[in-house]
Amino acid sequence: MTKDYIGYQALLDAALRGVVRDALRRIEKQGLIGSHHFYLTFKTGFPGVDIPSFLAEQYPDEMTIILQHQFWGLKISDDSFEVALTFKKVPATLCIPFQALTKFFDPGVPFGLEFKTTEAEVKPAPTKPAEPGQTATEATPLPPKPKAEGEESEPAAEKPAGAGEVVSLDQFRKK
Image (tube, rainbow, N blue to C red; front, side, top):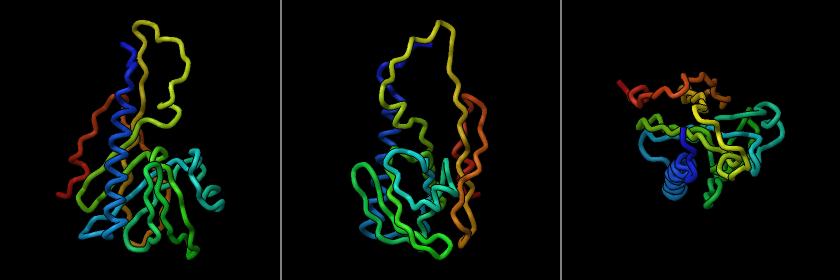
């Protein structure tokens, strides 16, 4: 496999994170309209993620939040967003860099994105070139299943798809 010196996956993920940023900017200005609501999954230990310690302890790796009925204080910057939510009747403000996102899903449409690069993958690391015939495989987790209204945010159960498997968007469409 030939080495990708341009970093197409990182470029694609950055562009798709821009879609999430623009969608959040729209609801920052006008609120959620129609059946739109968002599931945002992010790495809780990612640099720049600022969440209360009780959430970091409960979700040491990844967490999914839902922006639907009870959220406030949504503020969007170029690199991150901030939102206030309630967890077990305790209000908490979360600050999440867009680079920490692993999944985005709007079940109202339905529309979903999954991000494959992280900050460590975006920054070039000194590595030796792969030997001819070597390939890297990556398991791709499925998007979270929508939760019933009123259900608390919990980390999405990750079920890896086969390496290189194409996941159809039809699974997100209402039938």
